[in-house]
Length: 116
Length: 112
Image (cartoon, rainbow over all chains, first blue to last red; front, side, top):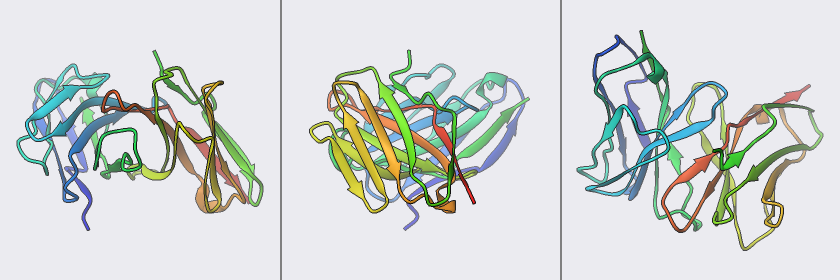
């Protein structure tokens, strides 16, 4: 099983450029998440989705947009890249709502983004 | 405001001994707690979890203890093995929303 797949794995962007980080999962999970990991800062939730057509902001949504047109895909869009968005981005999915045994989120390999 | 806190950025433990990783939380609404393990250049992988109605959950060498009154949980690894060297994230979730909140992580070094 592929699980959660993120593309690209690495990217260098110039300030002001835009890009979309792709995330797809083949586990038929309803819940999907985008996190960013900065050095020494753990994982911060950017956006999440509880199902197709539904998205919501996490802890650090500014500068990002998401869409969830299908169950499988949850792309993250950066419209005007800034150096502060240099980070490692992780997409994750889980089967059910948080708080029960199916809460465990499965993570992709990450996208390392550098904005210069 | 950090809701999930891992106050030790790193921990070194001799191979074969017990590793204890600690985590504190501030939100009493959390119902479920999880530990993730992360190797460099890989995504976090789920390790073990505990529901707020329990105070202990064990899976092989890994045991998680929950003290709700102290809003504290800990992960015990015994015996520690070289492959346990990684960053460990504590995470928490609530039935009332759909977010999983992570701590900053603790880097565990297992010494030969």
